[in-house]
Length: 188
View 1 (cartoon, rainbow, N blue to C red):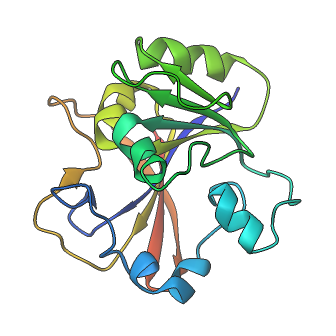
View 2 (tube, rainbow, N blue to C red; view 1 turned 90 degrees about the vertical axis):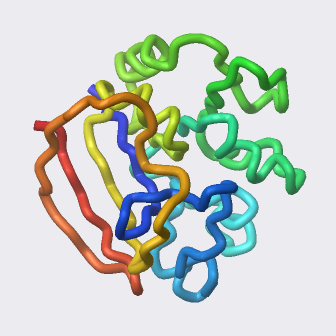
């Protein structure tokens, strides 16, 4: 069965963006050469894959990406309406209309959609962001892959937004990619 993997960059104190959604303070974004050290073809935006001549590289881990509206709008504001054209793209929003034929906008319960996607054949499902969607899907997340940057933000958008819901995970590994430590956690 496919797994839902929350693969996300986060600060030491657990924020995925600043208070206004900014994320340019992460070392992999502030220093593009550092960022290249931890990109993989599946999670690389399509326009970056093309620039790096990775367009023909087949997906190895993910074939589907899930995003909340705020995460999706980061690229959309820059004119990128299909940020991960090499993946099936789902954006969860009750206010966003149709944006691109390659992007499915879902205006209903994300849990129902994820359960249906998990029952299909294919590669794993990447939960790209954001914190609100991750909070709603916490019960469905099978694995966390946290690209922990060596920065303390102090405040901002947390990895998980929502109510108190202790959910056990166990750390199964870590590895370094430049200044970033990738922590892998599996649901208990």
